[in-house]
Length: 98
Image 1: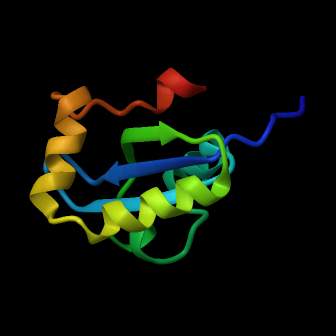
Image 2 (image 1 turned 90 degrees about the horizontal axis):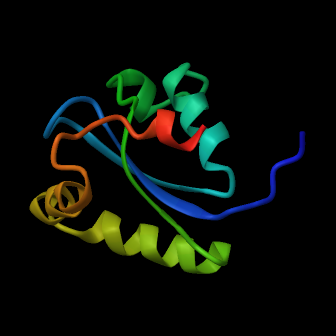
């Protein structure tokens, strides 16, 4: 099965209002699976940040990268507000996208 490239910005969390990670990818399902299964060395593996709590699809990789950089520069409070505007319970959204 072949998936089409769909650029996306995403936020992972270790727990409700826990440690956050902002990332960008062209394959959200595969990338979140990699994070959940500790296939990505670094921050998310070290701090067990596996819950997909927010994502946003983009038409181009360029727009997704710009959005990721902007969100990374935000205050933590703003990131929490973004997550809670669509996912008040901080539910793991990964089952919704597979």
